[in-house]
Amino acid sequence: MNFRSNKFLNIFALAFLFLLAIQCKKDIKKETSSNTSTPVEAAKQVRNINKEDSLSKSKIQYSSFIFPAKKKDSAMSAFKKQYSENERYTILALNRLDAKNSWRADTLIIPNKISDNFLDYSPFPVQIALLKDVKKFVYFSYPIQAFAVYENGELKKWGPTSMGKKAAKTATGLHFANWKSKIATSTVDSDWKLPFNVNIANQLGIGWHEYDLPGYPASHSCLRLLSKDAEWMYSFADQWILSEGKLKANGTPVIVNGDFNWGQQKPWRKLVQNSMANYLSETVMSKNIQPEIDKILAEQKNREEVVIAQK
Image 1: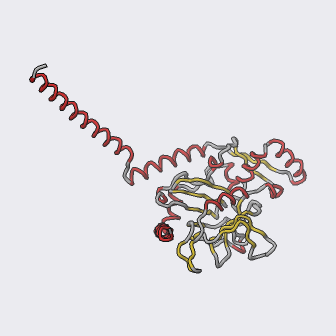
Image 2: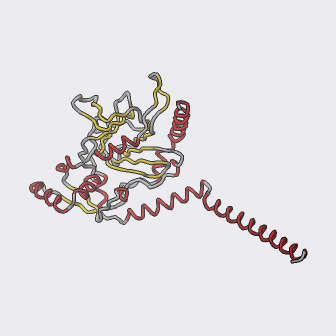
Image 3: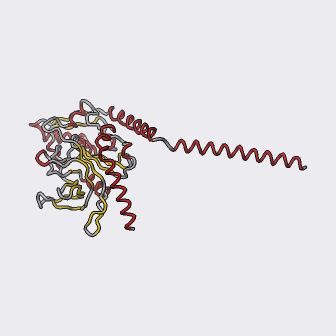
């Protein structure tokens, strides 16, 4: 092969490498642009996800299982025969009841399809853009007697609760998880043992824990949970950080919002007429969270700095 041929091949090779480099740069740019989005685009994506989820929930139909006063025992027997243990657990949870208090029911709302995934019935949005930078967050809704857990704005869990009765309402607003104990003793009655207790208002003695769910707000200010939920929440929550008896960092942020519609129809009963009757949209949730977001993020940053300093 002569010198001229070698020179031609070298030029061809350089041209090929140049074109390949340009194509790679385009591919990298395309991949990068597909993996990043502006805040406006990200918010739009969240809205679309929530829209699809709410559309799915709107298609769920609910019916009423009514217990005749004079034949309640036989009706309950028929209920237990018609539904499996797991199905009964889901139905009772949707009615803010546990198995122990199922006898209190006079009417139960029942979905037309009982899913193994309890999130399918969530009255909370699957994502909240406002919480994207918040690692852990818990929200208790007084009006619908339910709680939600978010990690970086994504719904991880929800469940029923029984909050403070009218004469002993749960304090609303922003709280932070303080201490926690697998078994705590009630400050109201020393005979009451509270499994998986997570305190959120130390001086007031308020926390969430396992206890009876009778289908309405019945506690002495605390936030009652089903046994499985209480155990999960106990593991999830970060407690405060103390040093020589002084508070260095708060635990998981918790917002308790709203008030119960005392003396009126229980909100979950309305699902029979409207399957979205209990649904809290992202707009509503964000409106309730927005006044506290700066405080939540500031406390989160402080906690991270304290944890690093202690290592």
